[in-house]
Length: 269
Ligand SMILES: C[S@@+](CC[C@H](N)C(=O)[O-])C[C@H]1O[C@@H](n2cnc3c(N)ncnc32)[C@H](O)[C@@H]1O
Image (cartoon, rainbow, N blue to C red; front, side):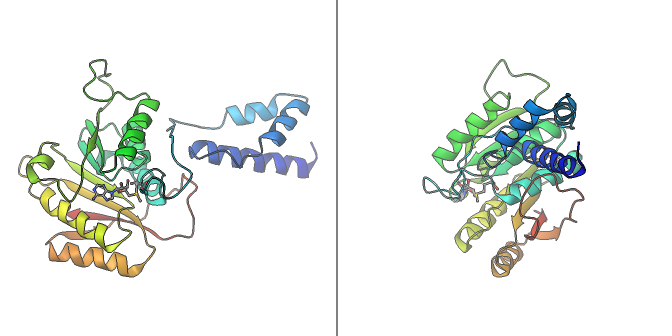
């Protein structure tokens, strides 16, 4: 194989691996050129190269291609969901054998990655939008997980629930019934109203103690507007919730915008 052809094949493999592992839409992948190369290659090296790439466990998602559809932002995966999933994959102990409540789960990528790699005891996906909840249930089943109550649930898998949970109306007793050890949320700081709702529900979650302990909380977001981030930390301060920034993790696994600034805050309720 000529050197430039070999470099082209390398690029093709890299691009395939990256999009395949990222569980992203493959529309832009050059299928035709790959098919031609596979047809014309005299041996099976190219095919082997693809098949032998490390793939680990995968997450399959059905999601919208529009960032806002049916009046919600929750039908598509946002970058902070990918960033939080990466952090979880590098820090599984934060979730292992624990009950995780996710706020504003959207399409479900972060939770599915955690269910598949971190061995939580139970995982509660939640959202307030009926269409998002419908898509979430579909995505949980698409990934071979059973939804509670399902007596066929495999005891090796976490107990998975998809719950309707609106931060503006959820009461302390409703939140306590989830018995969360860990609460997570990704990309839920995009406007002042949502920040006030989120801090409100976090304040009520601080009353949900298990063995005298409030849940650990991790909130991931893309820093789009410093004023919005400042409003979040100011409101946390007013609610008496301390926070610290989680150090950035090492490896980027997913193809989100590399230059956008991403952050995870750990909150002490
Ligand atoms: C930008 S999306 C993020 C979805 C997902 N976490 C991600 O990062 O891909 C925000 C999500 O928060 C949900 N949400 C907004 N306000 C909410 C509220 N008051 N109660 C519950 N969920 C809410 C939306 O329905 C939507 O699914």
